[in-house]
Image (cartoon, rainbow over all chains, first blue to last red; front, side, top):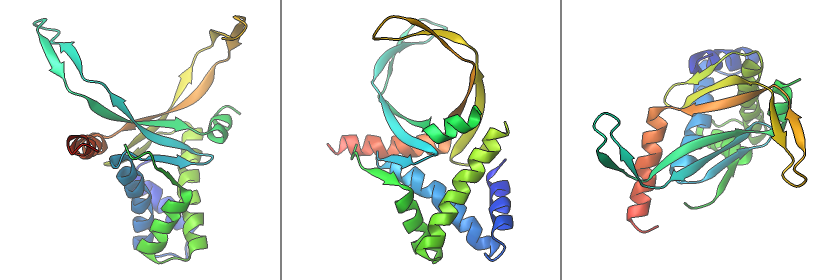
Length: 92
Length: 106
């Protein structure tokens, strides 16, 4: 399922809404989550899961071809952990 | 990192502000979006959200775990887990914004 298919599905379930409003609703959800992560905030959606940002320390990596040491800068990786209800639902 | 937590309430509030639905309906729509993603994944389908990331279900095989307190071996049954892969757009945005914060001594 893509974002546009998700929009169509939500529009079907809510025939009283304009499709352009459904588009804004779906976009707002992902935009708010992205903006929160970009501030370094955590996003906790009960029953669904939680998004957070993990910090990876700078390290000395290696170019696998030449074996030369390369400095790898510190970086931030987004992470998702599914919620309890969601996990139970997948394994029913 | 600022260490704040965003919840369903803030997502509903953003929809209320952005689209002008009632607060109650905004909350229902947040739930509808999340439920739809969860439903699709439960059916084994992938959910791809452009410039955000994709969610997919992976099958995990059975393995032997251990109770860390007692050291007893406990079988961990085969199960399905959700994995999220953030898109490059999202990763870049987070890295740009958080490295800027780190540089400004925040």
